[in-house]
Image 1 (cartoon, one colour):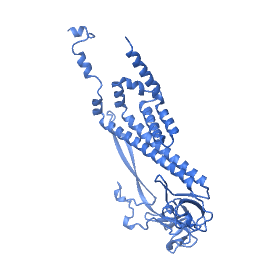
Image 2 (cartoon, one colour):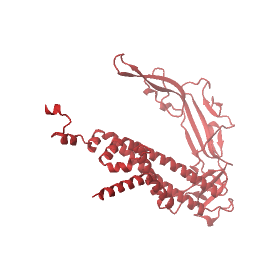
Image 3 (cartoon, helix red, strand yellow):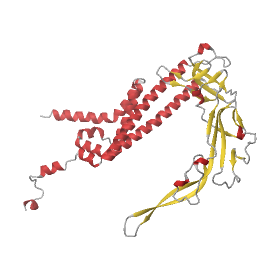
Image 4 (cartoon, one colour):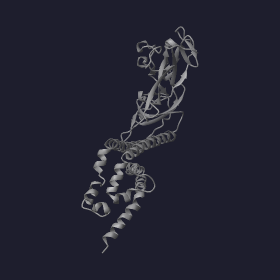
Length: 401
């Protein structure tokens, strides 16, 4: 009766009621444990990626600087000087490939570092479409109907038609009936002048150019069109099971390349720097040492920024999933909110940006002190003024009589 007439008057149970409804960090973690766990893992992954990336970028940058300082350009390529054995050398010139790579069935013969054969088979493929339809006009429930469509195209890999939803009339050749396998072969001898390119440098020929031979294939019924060898009765209306073959090369004899590596006898192999990094560079064209290492430094910067973006994004997404927990933690510690809660954006954005800049600064602090210190200062700059104001308020409160 008393409480009904005077509802705003404090009572015996107000303190207990207030204590019960006080925000609880543990209760919030219990209610949202799965997104919090995923967010925590993303934050750890993002920070780990940033740490690894900065360490890699620093080591590679120092290795490239050491390479530019110590690289030796031989006076001539026709003679391999013993005095350069074990040194980092730069050689540039046209490729010399004494032995051709051949495929006798198709009449292929080319002097190149690599020859690749790609086999594509004409096959059925299945496409799944989902449509949402109303179950009835009164209920808000919806049914998801799946529809399947089938078409044919050229594929390099085998499609198992037995897994189709509707196998009637959609049969691909069995894997045991696959006509040919794609392959890639490398040349045992590739040279620039008197220098043999080692196995590791030959693996770096990855840019392929399609081509066809002037010699007719020995296989009957093969038709050549647009650089492809067709095993089909009708090029314009192929049947399921028909296949076509395409050849391409990388590093053809006469193409000019620049190679940087360690001279080991007459062979060029990876060079190990003082920091333990391996240097082995292959670039197209005739290039000077300054051009080669400037290009590699630019590639290193590009790769570094891509990893940085990935690390920041993972950290930001993780903090976004943890945003409710972070907000509750700041509510429980108001002074911490005064420092971290910036007015320039959301809490996950500002904290993830600060973590990213801080980790980058720590990575470069030892090797580029000015750059590292500047990045750390930039990371801490948004929090300096709020922290100073907090200290000032605490001093003023402590000096009150």
